[in-house]
Image (tube, rainbow, N blue to C red; front, side, top):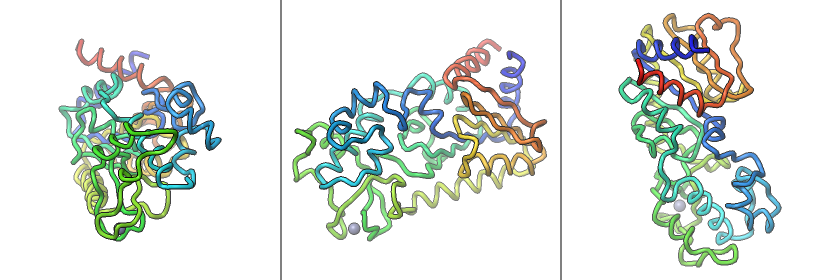
Amino acid sequence: MTDKYLKILEKIQEADSIVIGASNGLSISEGYNIFVDDLSFRENFGDFREKYNFYNIIQGCFYSYPSEEEKWTFFSRMFEYFLYDKKPSMIMKNLYKLVKDKNYFVVTSNIDDHFTLSGFSKERLFEIEGNCRYLQCSDVCHDKIYFGDEILSKMAENQDNGKIPLELIPKCPKCGGKMQVHIEIDRSFLKDQSWQSSYKGYQDFINNSHNKKLVFLELGVGAKNQMIKAPFMNLVNHEKQATYITVNKGEIYIPNEIYAKSIGIDDDIEKVLRQLVKMKQSV
Ligand SMILES: [Zn+2]
């Protein structure tokens, strides 16, 4: 086992570029599982569970709320759950320690903003499905997203019996219509200028890494993931000096074509990163 870890550290050390790909498994390792009816969900969203009969955060995101007051009660609570007064988790701190001095780029479908919270540069981050602390016009009447911390915090703090004061409900500054959190829950998801430039940043990073020592560090991405995993495996296959590192508990998939260039660890991501940082510091 130690050999694998040493190999990973060596590959990271030698790398010209590192691409981190992260999905639900990373959040689960941090303690945020948006797909289950666990203790954390019951403690933080128990009133919604009772009122609407949904049993996890993802169902809450897709729920059709009867009113704007009720919709924003949920989304401001979710914001607070992920971010309000939060400090980065140990797992995110360790991930940052591992790559902060390297030329890195992050691509993630996580919407909790935990990467920037932990020190990762916004310029080196592509959040494919958005970020729960930004808002957009639901009618997509203009190409802009808005930083929502202030209003989301206010709504989270002023909840009464599953509702928020009407005057707090955000309205589009251009058309006066409804707004929504900037996460991909329906076809209205706005691929605004900042989304486009992050996407381009990711493509440029990959293009500039062509023929160089390129490491793909994949954390908690499901075996059938088409957004992050499939492109990673394809690039590893075509790039001569690429290495594919995949960490996920109970779900490791490495195709034969790239087997020789790959290192897979089937274990808890928190544990793996902690061990890697410990070994890095003792080298
Ligand atoms: Zn609008």
